[in-house]
Image 1 (cartoon, rainbow, N blue to C red):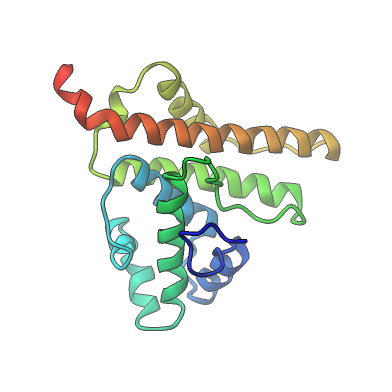
Image 2: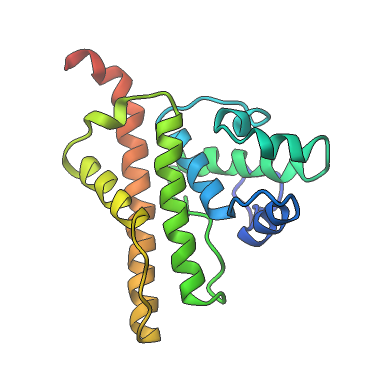
Length: 190
């Protein structure tokens, strides 16, 4: 069932969260995945073995040491890289499963967006600063989501609103990835 480019089962939010929790680093799985995604979207180049250092997450790197848990983070990197470039647009933010309470999922989405914006900044690319049109609007909206705290009300309305925001983030990130991938060639035209 896995896409042909994947060699192992996809990393789950629960696996990554459990590993980060066991390392006592105070970093959420969603924030970590958002950081990685933002870094990659903005053209941050890394190898699967050094991306934690590139994202200024040396404490995660140090805590992992040579443990078997390192493979989970290498898998996360490989999956994110592959899915961002997937012509089927199968990329998804790494968020808690639908069985988790809506407040937990909404909080994770906020953390994911914060991580994404941080990763974008850590990429070393300034291409995102000149974005206009739809891409600029998506970036602004991600900033708004990152600064939000969701109020939960009617469960059904909350589920629908959450699903819409997740889909907007997912599609917006793919749009940004496409725009930022073209940015280096366009930079000479400004």
